Length: 228
Ligand SMILES: [Zn+2]
Ligand SMILES: [Zn+2]
Image 1: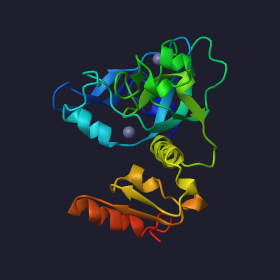
Image 2: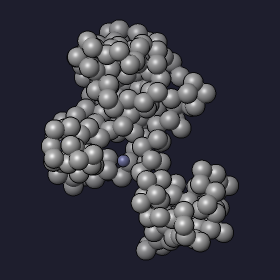
Image 3: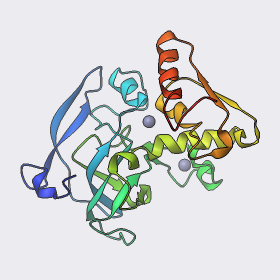
């Protein structure tokens, strides 16, 4: 992956191409300015960015939380190419992956260590510009370093994988003799990933639709995610 920021934008790092939701039922690629990082922010040269079902809902005008004219993309990894004032935990060249959910840190739920219930949440790629773009800005608090050996495409899957594994933990699946994943999507199919969670060797997946059932069967035949 090319990590030279001057080779990725025609004007040397200012304007860049972004996938933008028009606020109705349209999505397009636009040339957008990405300013220098503000206080506490990182500027990221995006190396890999995933597409999620949420993106499809936003693009169809079916996601009320989304901000019109937002740059999509909430599952992405990349390299730090700029740091704002006060940033001391990251430096240019660091490879990072993004936690897209930005809690307000002041509401009662945030104070109660339940930021997933935040009353005033922001989300990168939903309410603020995201990573389906050559460059992205994000708060330092939302970045996590990734090992140099981890491919960017794999690092970009951290958020959906984390969601699936968290669901496994909440469901107490480690204590069960087997479990069923309902739905054929990649996130659900991550849940029984036996290479990550040996205790989940006995797993199956199912879908309410014929298309989904076909996808479930395909995933189930994969070497690392297998019904047993
Ligand atoms: Zn998603
Ligand atoms: Zn909050």
